[in-house]
Length: 363
Image 1 (cartoon, rainbow, N blue to C red):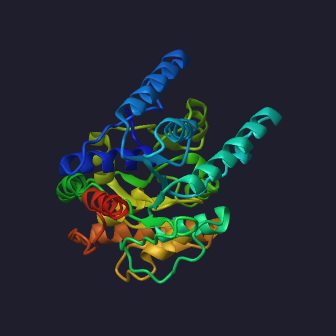
Image 2 (tube, rainbow, N blue to C red):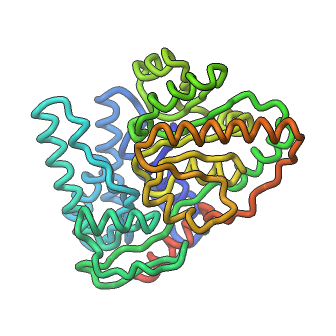
């Protein structure tokens, strides 16, 4: 099974909490792992029943998806003593994705239920200050929270009506990235991927226009992408010269990062941006839109190789991407040696420890 976004966060944190031996962990994969509707429904019902039988002291649920809503409802109905923690990454509107009135009404209903679920939860776990601001501005939750908090510090206030937010962060897989760094040193002169991009394509803004302009200026350039998308979209991107690989294995991910010269990430919304953090950890120059989370995380890091572009300014984005590739090629000709950047990012172990601290605080 491929894990991305909220599912990746949930799996990594659950694995780390389990490894700590502090708590017994029951992992319920209620989203299912099959494309067959009947089988998926059976998996969901089975795991919902298991959740009731397990009767957890604390349930950690993602804020996105009907399965999360089902778990929340089941626990509130049958296990009222269970403390419910909702994990909130960032706001992602469902309505614009609708194709007809029925779908519009359905998604409007789901968004309303998610709002109720967030307010009804005992704790909301967020991954960044930007996520917390989404809760304030969109859901009107936690408006009394002090904004002046230190990076990576847990923020928790015990006014359960308004201020029940804990910022616990998101981690990166340092062991995996160290493997890539060792491989990078061997392949530094053999990099053949000019631009790399990883993530959900529906969150990317003006990606196709950006790439068409880059190709116009640098016809020999290539762009490799990975992430969730449809076969139709892969074919569409292929028609303009984008090599989209879909989901890739950890081995393929290591290989792609090792061969990449520049990382472009024109995402319009992020709670943290794991792919950006990974690229920066590896010393790969990053070009991204100037969105709140990146400004908050990286604006004060002077040596960080990230250029944040005015949102929507395609020409500027393209200009900086070209500058980055030209700079890489110049450094490659001068035999510049790769040095691991002196940056500190949270690991999944530290994020899990933050979550454990919140659990213990609320017991």
